Amino acid sequence: MRAVQQAVLSEIVDGRIWASERSVWFSGVRLRARTSVIRLDDGRLLVFSPAPPSDGWLRQVADLGDVSWLVVPNCFHHLGTPVAAAAFPEAKILAPRSAAARNPDLRIDVEIHDPAFAAAVPECALLPLEGVPFLDETLLYHRPTQTLFGADVVLRADEHDHWTWRFAARVTGCYNRWSVPHDVRKKVVDKAAASRSLRALQTLPIKRLIVAHGEVIESEPLAQLVEAWRRVGVES
Image: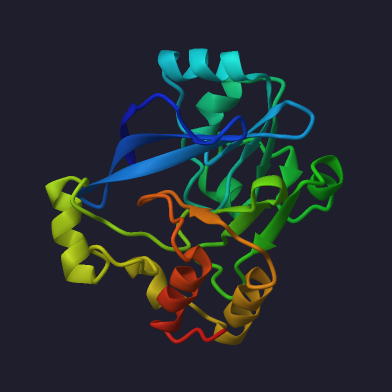
């Protein structure tokens, strides 16, 4: 995956959540990829799915506060983390071991299933997507804003995307429709476990879902997530 440019931050929830998008080339198509920034209750910042930071992005983040956590949500969204870690040397890196296996430059300070994170950041909950080791994704729920963060749990292309991704999305069934990524659909090895993960999400009040590839979902976010997985045989 090759990054093209990281844009500056836009505010999503007043004083609590910001996000930036950059273009990345992946498997011959150009997607938009999102990095999110959350202000924690102690005033420090958590960066979800870090990207190589641009100078403008770093200036904006510096105005918001100190970064204390860099979160790698699955075994694919790790490439920008070593560069981000160099920019924020005091931040701890939370990531799955599967990401470190793919990237020898990735340092892990806290493994993503370690309860130490929940103890340090009680306003956030980590929710693994079980049954899909190919992706090894863990979602993050921010209780104060009722926001669920994911990376590749679902994705969608629309008219704002590059023509290469619009074309591929029409072929794979995710143009203007939230869908499980094409390369993930046949890699669900335990649908019962994935179903349990979806049911766990449905116990939470969720106002919005923020993922890496597609617009922020604020209209029935949980229903759209569940429906996407239902179409690949994962019932909830």
